[in-house]
Length: 241
Image 1: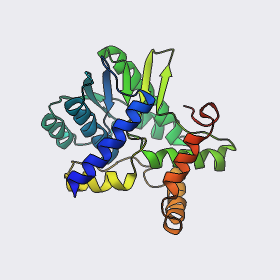
Image 2: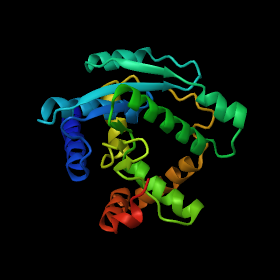
Image 3: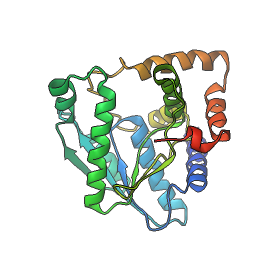
């Protein structure tokens, strides 16, 4: 079953890459590894694309330590199995967000700080792209969050060029369902780290996810149709950073 799922996800990653030019010859890609199932799955498939397609590119695996004294050894070993060295960058982002700033909406600040740190590291490493582990469900959740709490249509792009940094952010798993990621990471026994974030499981995104699970249960395939609807709409209207 895992081999069938690997082939299925590989095709989705390849199709997204071809459609949105995510992985190209000569790329030097920083793979943002959080230790969660999504980023580990993304890293795994980046190495498969590197191995089983003619595209010539390199991968730098980078983990941002948020300052919560997490154990990264399992992820380090996983990277070695994939033929990669994990670079751990220690930061104070966790303390800044939850102790110094005490934000009412910590996720937005945390995301901005992490993204800024990853972009700076990418420049230091000579990378032209930063790969993030956002999947299909994340895209749909973001769409509903924007409508419910911001009163606008907003979905992240599969590929976003940041002209000020001269870096492109890519999301190779944009076609992949979270349920497939969960099943694959379990079957391959990926060393998924438990999130120590104080806001884990208590965000607006988690609430929207619960609502969409109810919709999916009542109308199977709803998430995929939501994403297809976004792709069929005018890209300049819906796909944004």
